Image (cartoon, rainbow over all chains, first blue to last red; front, side, top):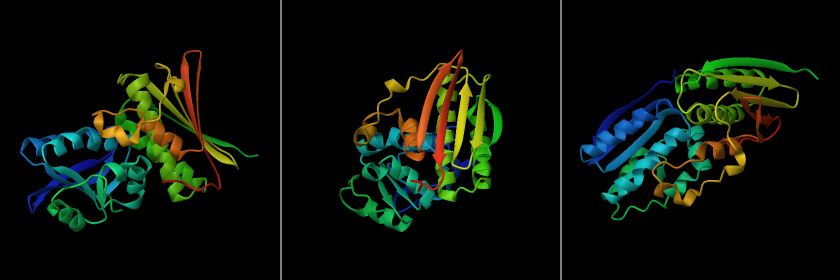
Amino acid sequence: MSTFSVSFRDANGVRILDLHGELDAHTASDLEESIQQCHAEGNVNLLINGTDLDYISSAGLGVFMAYVEEIRDDGGDIKIAGLQSKVYNVFDLLGFPVLFDICETEEEALARFEEPAPDAGNASS
Amino acid sequence: MSETTHTLTIPSSTRYLHDVRRFVAEHALDAGFAQPTVNAIKIAVDEACTNIIKHAYDGDTSQEVEVQITITEGHLQVCLRDEGEPFDPSTYQEPDLTRLTERRRPGGLGVHLMRRCMDEVHYRTDQGFNEVCLTKHRNRDSVV
């Protein structure tokens, strides 16, 4: 069975979600619950750290798409950082760099939250 | 020409997707495919298996999915077989990636990934079973 977990941190008013393991159709609901929980607690600036994410399928990618509009409507954003190249390539195949702010490092993504008008169309990776 | 086959049958639950990926990766690596190509094959087979579980069987976990790998000198082919509702590839529309976020639950991403990751994707339905065959030829660069 796929192993997947999410742990949480906060930095500069941003809720950071550290993803660990494999994100597929079996584990995508765990990520969905985590994002829902963060949003329900009033967090609209979410940073997904994928340093320890070893695998992603379209089911995992679909979770980001399901919530990003809602989060942006509330004045926040979902930004993504630290992806391994094999995982980033899947994001890239589906055109995610156009839809999401994907940064190489967590620090870069945190700095992006400081910018006045986040624009989802400006990917850096 | 030598040909080897390997078969794994799993219950129709997403719980077993990890086993399918591991099964496919082991044999693709043994067959000499490079890691990026193995990654591409893994995700394509995962997407095909997920579609069977979620759509052909509509979440019924009491059914089975058969995964058969055939390796030849020229290619690796993975065929997934089920007895659920058939998928009609003629109804498939490529997702509009620029408008994906306007739909909370966009469909078609898995099929899109399968086609991008593999060299050939073929569907057939025959006497109560459905089969999707994914083929990767040797000596072609991988996108993943």
